[in-house]
Length: 201
Image 1 (tube, rainbow, N blue to C red):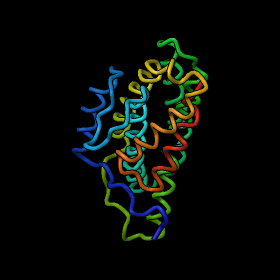
Image 2 (image 1 turned 90 degrees about the horizontal axis):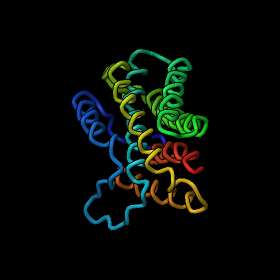
Image 3 (image 1 turned 120 degrees about the vertical axis):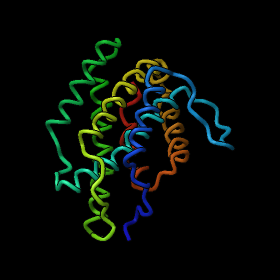
């Protein structure tokens, strides 16, 4: 059994529709993150940003499932460039440094690959555990495009919080709490650690 098992349940079908609705509500706001009962941690100011990053990492499960079903490779340089170009364009429109934002999105892409390669490794080792065909990549990319918009809005909303000596601790603490709220396993925690590397400016 792989070291990171048990893994997160794969998002599929109706859950993607729900994800779109949630993202539509989250993207324009910079309000406090939703808290679970018993979570008394004060809002760090970057929690909505971390929650969107967590959602993107979770969507990596769906991407992995679609690619596995189609026998597609994890690496997709053309699609990655589309994401980075959109991030740079969105940064300019929000008064953000395009290079800084591109670095953040490169980390999101790398984090998704951590998930995809990890799941591919699981399914190669245990073919019986491989998922049935699920949501196609075109549908998943609608979710990812909404997440991109939300992340850009949150990067703009948290620019002051992410600038300064305290940022590293703030982001790490917020990431730790976000992983707990999401119920992340070892694989997805590793992806989250990769995703937050460039958040501080």
